[in-house]
Amino acid sequence: MKRHLPILFLSILLTTPAHAEPRHLTLEEALTLAAEQNYAVKQAQESRAGLDGRYVEERAAALPQLTASAGIGLSRDASQEVFGAGARQQSSSAEISLTQPLFTWGKIGAGIRAAKVAQQSGDQSILSARQEAHRDVTIAFVDLLLANELQRLAGENLLQKERHRQEAERRYALGVATDYDVLAATVAQENARPEIIRAANRVRSVGLRLAYLLALPEEVVAEGTLAVTISAPLSFADAFASAVAHRPELADLRLRQQVQTEIIRIYGAENKPRLDLRGAAGWRRLELDNAAGDEGNGAAWNAGVYLTWPFFDGLRTAGKIAQAHSDLRGLSISERALVDAIGLEVETARNGIIDAAAIVAALQGTVGQAERLLRMAEQGFEYGVKTRLDVDDAQLNLLQAQTSLAQGERDYRAAEAEFVWAMGKAGE
Image (spheres, rainbow, N blue to C red):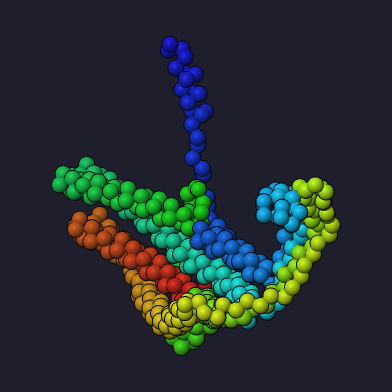
């Protein structure tokens, strides 16, 4: 049995599926993938394809409708015997029928126009989904860069704590430090380990979110840095004007109002007269079951123009028109509300850029000062003029400055992505 264990273990290894290797992406590569693979984008594309089918359906109402039919029948009517005809009759026929609307009070034209405008609305939905994906992926990407930076800082902090412990042990061996100093350095080193675990989990969680936004099965590794180039954002007036002109959600609402206007025309034609051309051509055969065995067959056709006028429908049409007008007014209200909401989004994102830029500018010099302060504290501790508390304070100040700077750079890039999206320029 023991001889077969290595073989069994090897077979298990060979049959166990291997995890996919992490995918390394830059921000530009991630945004390119998001524009095509994001789930929301794909859903919008499928909805747009459905609108193409709806346009074909509406256009079909203006085209001739041709139907082929054939049949054979058997009937019996005893009352026909009085006239010398057979009580039983057998008939068969084959024909092609045609129906062509001639005048529908604008109903067909309105339906075609509504379907055409709906296609444009679908295009705006795709654009909106891509812009939102651009914003979300950008923010998730810089979140991953921040998580990587915090993981790096946690690792550096642990290494520094380890160096301090080693220095304390060296000084203790020389007789210039106590066992308390060694114990304090050891405890500080162990206290730094949990942050390593949290930082690694944070990187994995944020990476999985980015992979989800990109519809990727494997983990994503972000390539790049958080470094930013600070520039003044557009004025609120210019940014708001751009948003009103370019936001696809706003364009979609306006197109939906056009569709609703056409729907009102469609409903308005439902109780109006309409003309249709109807005709049929084919072959028929009739056989009578009488003494003479009469039988006839030959070509048959018919054609005519028919007027239909549902002049009273119990006010059903009036009710549908009232509902459609209410829906149109609701869309108009939604447009005004969206304009106000867009203004708030633009202002909020702009303020976020200004705040983050000020924080980054303030902290860029602070990190260098904190690094210098830590070096001075460590040297002073070696010479006995600084205490362990001085070194710990300097190290904590440096870690806080580095963390705050990384968070500020992340916030600046995220606010910038929000601002570009709010202006309707994401992805351009």
